[in-house]
Length: 624
Ligand code: ADP
Ligand code: MG
Image (cartoon, rainbow, N blue to C red; front, side):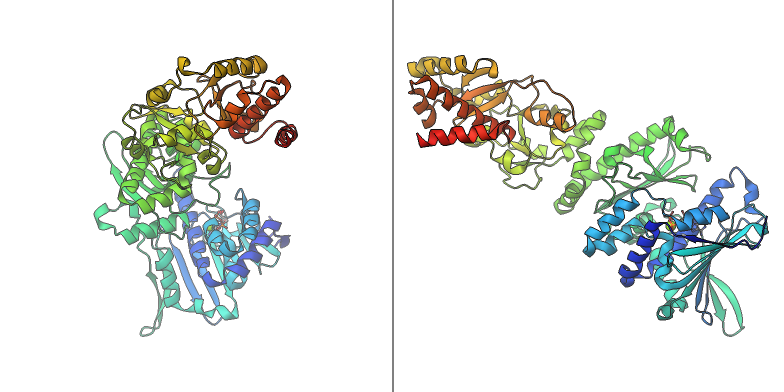
């Protein structure tokens, strides 16, 4: 191997962009660089512990892992070193010259759009190693991978301006030592008390000791002082942990700057032995809608860190839950593949799913305000639940919130429990309508009968709703019913208002026949209706046909659908119908019927196949 081989490299363009953004927008919260560097050091020690399970030689006869911080005022340097796994020369180029995180590009773009929230977003994203350049004019990383020879060390240096260089060096101890050459105006970070403060603020929950070098004036000697507790919080007894400690730990775990809404900490014994600590955040992570979003719990086995983002312990619709699981039953050498096909995982996943739903139930009972926050952030994610998890369907349904006629607001706050307890005495089903928007659901002609009878209807307008309703069949014995479909349960409610054949005028019977004959198989049937009050006509789907919203979903997904045939219902009490009924001229009559049908289509679908024809026909009839 050639020693002193020095090479100059360019940063990946995303890194340059991130460096620029960070240096210019994080000036109010500079201190987080220390959190990031200590977190990396601790990760490196976790990795070493994990790797050494199969190769104990990696410890190089030194198993006392620690992070050490020392200050050199004369040289204006701050040095953070660890005896963790370290990096090879290749590692430094890959890890410190590029950003491996998926979604980085889209993240940077969203930052540019949301200037005002920049600080918050960057904090969440986890700025990582590069944050050292916020306070430093130059950064030197000396590192050596555990188990390699001293002469296989690497020096990585950069001033954060587009380039870095890499040199081979001799490094006796394994691990990484990072020297920050602080900018002149950042001398506050050379004060021991300041550093101690930052560490207790951000890094108390690091499970390895973090030591700072102190000077003893009396004896004129240096000594190391441990400044964090270095105890895994989740292993402690619940009663000995304060709320603030839980909150701090959450922030440490997630990089989220907000407090969590609620959490649950459990030591489980018996068939399975594990500890779980689950949190519900206040705010959705920036990438919750990314397809490759890395959600999931942090996994430990018998206190040893194994991996981040293990998705196997929670279903997808609960991907907003954060936290950790520490199992005593899984093998230490567990891999993602083993996790995926494992009865221990399956059992824990079942239990944690129930646990999460229970936390949410508790949240909904504890605080309306907090549950509203939760619903606004994660309601759409939870709505994936009915399709994904049939076993917990009723529990999920109980957590859903809706807009409704009576609630009279686009905000989704009504629970199904509340809906049922306010049902009309003759009402058997839970009525709902799906539409493209709240406004269009709220004003649908299908609602007229319900408004008149003082029956509440759930107004569904999220894209996922129609799909979700396929899986929500009933709640507490009450079936769900789309009101844009034909349905006999309504007969009971409208018995008295129903138009009996013998009450119908001869003209009306004749009229119905004429319309049927003219429309032929353009529609499934033509009927008189008792549903409408203010609208002359409406289209209904047959009870076993696809609804309009479902058809829209399918065609938006590029799927072909059979042509939908509707039942055309006409309101005989409407003035316009009474007027058309009297038209003898066949051509004029047909024009009016076409206009009515198009009106009904417009109300049902929100658009027409041929709007120009509709407009010119209407104008023609208006002039007459
Ligand atoms: P992240 O920690 O989210 O992966 P960072 O920017 O903080 O992102 O670090 C980038 C990578 O550099 C880490 O994933 C790790 O591989 C490597 N790294 C950083 N600091 C150390 C360290 N002290 N010891 C070993 N590897 C490190
Ligand atoms: Mg990091």
